[in-house]
Amino acid sequence: MVARQRWLSAAALLAALASGCAHDPAALGREALARGDDREAVRQLEHALRTDDDAALWRDLARAHQRGGDLEAAHAAIVEAAERAPEDPSVVLVRAQLRLARDDRDGATRDALWLLDRLRDAGDLERLAIVLVRLGRADAAITAGRRAVEQSGGAADAYVNLAVLAVELRRLDVAAGVLREGRTRHPAHVALAESEAALLLARGDLPSARAAYLALLPRHGRPGLVHLALALIDHELGELDAALVHARAAVQAEGEGRADVHYTLCVVLHDLGRDDEARAQLRRARRRFSAHDGLLALESTLGT
Image (cartoon, rainbow, N blue to C red; front, side):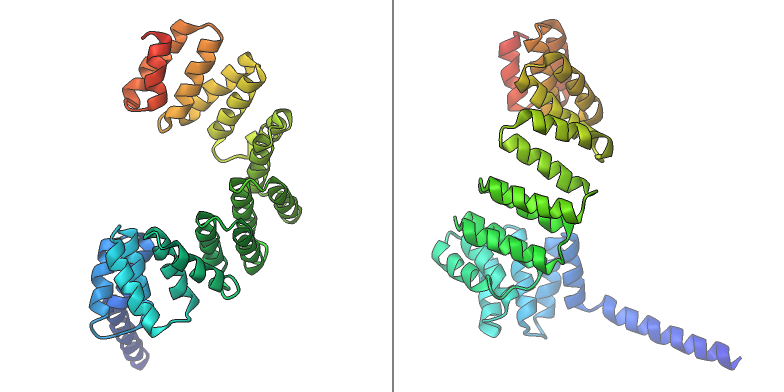
């Protein structure tokens, strides 16, 4: 009986603690922010700030307002956060993002360059890299991406993100080096293999890109996207029969959600001289994707 009473007492304590957490507006606000419920995050964080004038709460309120599209409220909140913690990198990062969003490029640049040697979180460094890309600071963006790889402990996804960033900046040699290093450390990682295939495509090496996508096909979680890439490559190479096989497979796998696979199939059919089939495919696609610009343009080409 004593043991049972003690257990009940412990259970009551845990319930009380859980209840307390459940009603903590700071915790609720951050939970809402994490799940993407920005309106609820604003409500809870504003409630929390009535009794706790904490810089991190102001920072999170700024993030919630920013994601909700209220840049002026976000700016006001980050000003409050920066007054309380002017050298907190997490605060300065949000301020840099907001300054860029409000077209204060000089302020955003000052913040971004100050952050480059101070951020230690891989995710924050990747967010900084995006800010630097938008500011036209390519070298600094790549530096931030490299540091994100280091801080992640060489995670495969960090290599992928840096490679994508380098390709976007047209630093293809940098991307190739990143992918070589990443593939050495993570030889079986599918996203790295996909990035390598995309890099070959960006370089215009269509035969090598085709071979890379074919090798990727049996391992990819969404093979329809690989078939789409192969259809486009084969079409560019003039291998229209092979392009048709891949275009049909792409439509079968991805046709419910993507208009571009239907567009590709219609183009391939048209280039093969099979216009009746192309028109029939286009009619089916237009019923599902009535506003797609490419499909609309094909109507005049095919005379439907």
